[in-house]
Length: 111
Image (tube, rainbow, N blue to C red; front, side):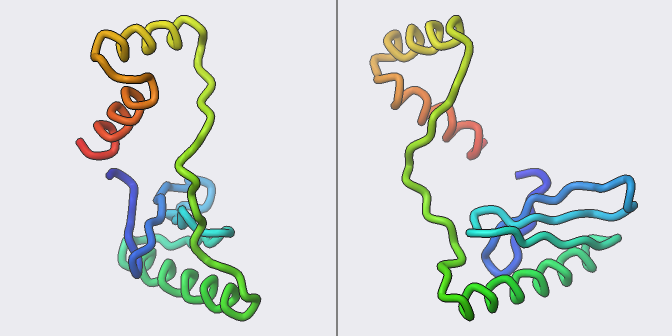
């Protein structure tokens, strides 16, 4: 995936902040915010590791589960016309709308 850095098994989305002239990383899938900044990829990795260690230590200290649990359900709002078209596409493929959307999402995250 583009703009993803893995640090100690945890993924972070990387972006560039032009106002600070630095890269920004933000861990995803955690039960709280853990972001970090640096001016180069090696420094960003180092700062990310430091930020993650701090976040995990605070979670342990407070008895908080650091990793967010996902239910496997989410609501997506789309225009009515798109809803109709994807329902038709699912029916034409011989699968439920849920299965069709799941397959489309799998294709997107596993190209």
